[in-house]
Picture 1 (tube, one colour):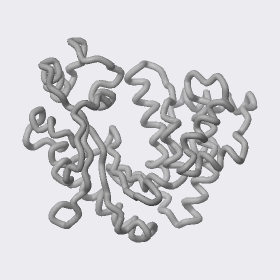
Picture 2: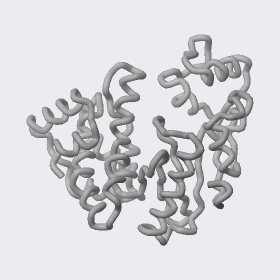
Picture 3: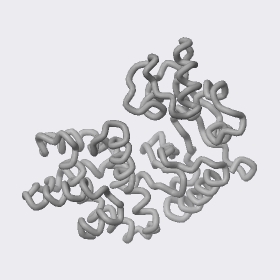
Length: 273
């Protein structure tokens, strides 16, 4: 797939497309083949991304990184979808991971920057797919798990989540039968037990929580801030109050209470899905 077709498919912002096309016109060098192999190898993802950063040099807005990784998406990943019979209707929603995070950076900081290059190898190497509302990551080699990830634009209404899980289970059975008995887990602030104090009983997030049995909680973890209060690093009176959750959580935190995160495994069965 040529680059411009890919950019249109992923609905990249116009200014981002212009930047990427300008980089190509200026002659940005494609990464060496051995570096591409590292980025597509789960055991070497992190090392590959670090080496790519060194290869690219100065890249303050991450657009060189995005250009390089989209080259893999449009050539290797797209062709792998076709070769392995992965439904092509999953390709764009999965790869729009980058589009979503570009938009979130704009909303939070007022500029387009791509700072999630370290996560993109999951999608590029066909280890993570978006199926409806949720994303599913095939993780690990020996101690395998399938992790459910919750995109910021996910429709968390119970019927939407149920449809996503059912569609993924059918997809897994058809295309990844070797993963059929692997547990499905979620590691998220949305599983935090503290949310029961902060959300109404009919909350979609609380409905989502009920699908899981908690295995571990970390009340001291603070990375929930990145999702509830993007761009905010400290708990103080300046935290925004744009949503009811932000307002309630802010009051909760200012009282010295904790939110944290939790990990749980999905309860399968028709009564839960």
